[in-house]
Image (cartoon, rainbow, N blue to C red; front, side, top):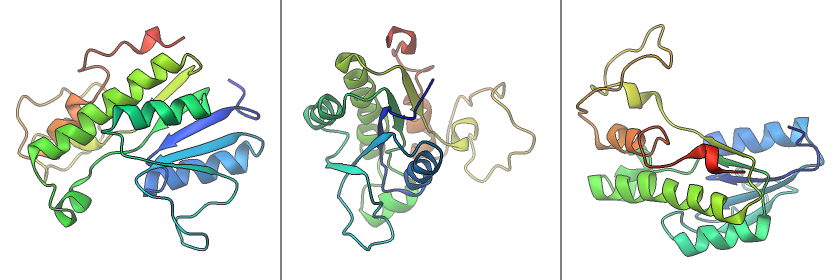
Length: 178
């Protein structure tokens, strides 16, 4: 897939993973049109601000806001990196099953459904976490690959939400994106 002139949307593009993806895309595909959907737009000069990017502000738990952004961008590719992680959840007093489910599960559904609806998306890249294969959040992972089974129980709501947001666990059908 040629990304050189492609329209690309990165949800959570102001986070650590999102910023890395955007900078990589700019370096390797300088003519691509990159847009970010995140909770807030960083001020110019801030470490999270990236030049030559179009910013959309909004919460992925808002189905309407997600649809608006995707309709405006009409992306060929969506990198979905937005999510609620434990460090941020604790700081925002959102460390509950309901909060993780709202952002990581329903938010992911909102982005994927909007990607299907807009009709331009040819690739949807979902970033997740190694926690999806850790029933115990302190478990060390060595030589792990995609064949590792998903645990039946988790000691952390975050990990559970990341499993539930996986297209392979949800009622999503990625192949229906044309």
